[in-house]
Image 1 (tube, rainbow, N blue to C red):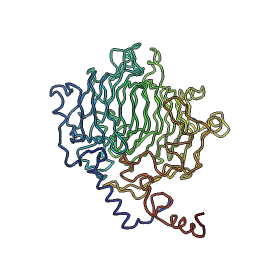
Image 2: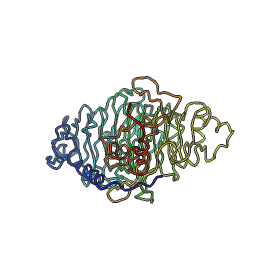
Image 3: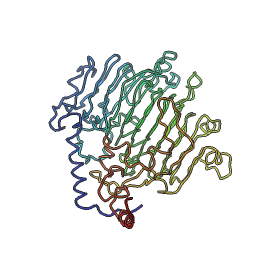
Image 4: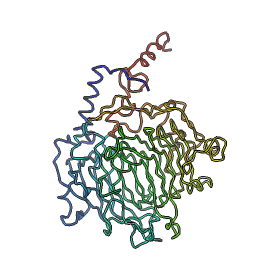
Length: 520
């Protein structure tokens, strides 16, 4: 890793000015007032006092600053509209998470834009980039519940099982309350169910702890159907997973998960959707306990009980293209295949994981049969690119040949495809060395192209970002971009000729080598 030279004083002041001003300019391109001048509205005043439900469809406008001081339920037949540029700040209420819960049949229309994202965060966050990403578990984030298929069964016998096959109680919320149910009775599923739109939404500092091993994810989706649009969503500083799908068919694009305490993507209970363009970075510390950050890139489950299949359930079987996930080379897995899952992960990059693909014996059976696929992925600085049931297949074995030859996967050295190391210190999220997840032009090639099916984009490269592109799809709407974690945040910085986020001797080399030519 190159040690950056100090930026010039002028450049440093310019960066500080940009970050500081963003706190008050959220939504300014959409005519929204400065955040500090918005009228504060307690969301508890917009719900029924006895049940935290809205009485009728509501619109949250960027003219106000909303304080989430309650649970906020949107019921069957109701709509919640959230204007671009709107900011919602949640109060902490340990053990009883303040959350926005879209129940089965309810819909949310949070249709932000790159210029005017919708931000949901903690009341302690001044939106100036200084609220530490290690502040996690402050609130319950967004929970979407739908009517699409799940393989949840009464025979599971756990706390989230209900008396109806196909219907579960979502993790993190109380059992026995039908507002917390997801899925539908077997035979009544609506796989094209529409829970609304989430687009250009940044979810920060969520994942409230409800009890032992019971936290809420950054974006929880239970039985959500593929009529729902999920696109350009950031989860940052969450106490549990970034995104978790409990069954359902929902598709999603442009997902960012950073500095979270658990997995980036977690699927379970018969999830069969499509995912493309996923970016993850593990947190800046891993000191254990409350400060532990990060686990698997993908945790791939079919169910939580073998009885699901005995009672007519089908396994998870999603299709994923173009992920880039960066870890810290601790004891984590890029892809954790477990619980009899099916599915495909293709054209992706996993950097600095201890294990690249880790499978149980049951998943290996699916992998060998072609029901679970990991193809044309690059594993950079992964100590063990392939592990099966605790063992590491040797070169020349059938499993080793399938993984590296038949399936087109690569194991490459540290920093050889992407710059996967960074330095961020606390407090105040001070970044002194950026990652660069964008491969150089002409690299990260693949022989596989996503299908032309109306959802997937035809990105014929490995990873979440087009090789050689100067700016990434993070720019303008994410906290990651505001913090300058990614080198594309420095695009256009005067003097940074190689666009790596540093003004240093390498830039001088490019400058000096330009002499002696002409412009004709």
